[in-house]
Length: 583
Image 1 (tube, rainbow, N blue to C red):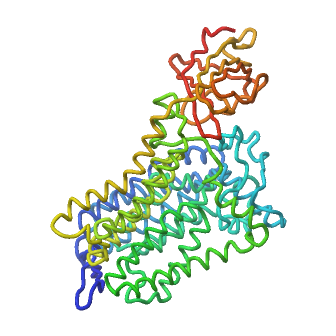
Image 2 (image 1 turned 90 degrees about the vertical axis):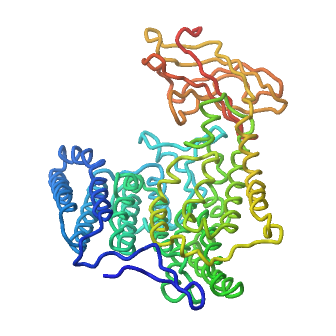
Image 3 (image 1 turned 60 degrees about the vertical axis):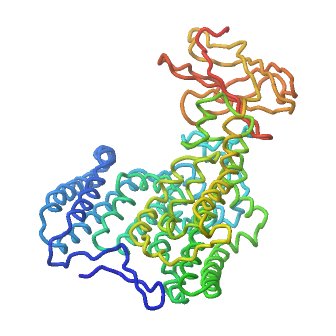
């Protein structure tokens, strides 16, 4: 079977895709194909024992099914290095896929309660079915006593509202019969992940199919996000058919039924979660560049307009009911992750402020840096699309590394798209793409001019990030008294702080003690002023939100006293030693 694919890139010329020819069905498979199948098979081991142990205690039928999956994994591990033909290895790829799907289903059957996203999506679906408003409604009871994570804000509260586009809610509504908590939403997300995996597996060339299984269902990473109920999993599944061979969208100036379907999937993905909003400009810019190199500027613009028009129409159709029923609430709801003022968190540059310094009075500059970096990356993508084209599905996420919320889930959830583009949108697809080259960027000094352009594009983001990192904590805090439990001095019931505002702007801080990464609950203000005037000093008494704070028994545990303010966004932190502190 000949897997080589060609594309018309210019009149009279064809370029072979990097999806190179594979041996015929009767021939021996390539060594890398065997290794890829084995890697996908090995990836299924990770996380399987934990769900088996859980099933063996209460769900013996599922435990038996998982044990059969172990047999499948082991037998495939024997056969993958030993089968003689490509056709036989392709059948093993299908076995690995089916095994992964069964394990994902078992994982959902055992753990389908969901997290904050799943609970909020399910509650939003209930409100929708009941004819109530979905956006702008707080549902704090979903989080009380459930152990579900909260999203704290710099204003001293927590976000209890639904903050995603409505597609996940619409898909969840028919499944409310599945139960309480987040089960309906997690079922939708798990089903979407399985459907996306099968779609990617089917659309990739045969030797690469196990890579789809590995990236989507291997290691248990994305399956865990689906069981939490992340709407981004739905967006991922919808983006897969868009990204596979995306430079061929509008080939010859016509979308056709496949192109229209892919544009519709793009619009639906944008109606599922906000992450596709960041990818869409890169895809549209790339499509324009490739089509302009083939057809010219006017025809390329018409192709992009048709793609954007179909995507926009689908997006608008999904949102119509919510726009009509409450446009203001809807707009604030879908923009919530951008405007909610959540506390800084993640694995990016913001960690300097969180863990390595004592805070910053310029937290807002992380957001400025992220937006400027995203704009610079898009500009660089357009300028160097022939080189950066295959990285279109990776570049947008770089901007999150300098954002206030830079958790790795933003990257992990879209990694199957990296694979899809690497296999089906290689460099030869962009060989004749249009790249803007104004007069200053041409001629004998072209290289220095391009280098200067790159620096100028990145400079605003770098300066903003530097301003955020080098900010100083605006508050100095000192523990002056602790109230402890009588015979258990390791339990703190209240704390008195002396707070000094070193700046000239009045600040309204919200305090917490943390013993690890992330955020603990805010402490409650019992006595003292809520706002500390500029260059002023205040004494405040605080108590834990649940009435007690246990001092960690392990020696050397780092305890951080933190104070967040919302306007302006600042963070003041310092390490404290509670043992031996005056009582």
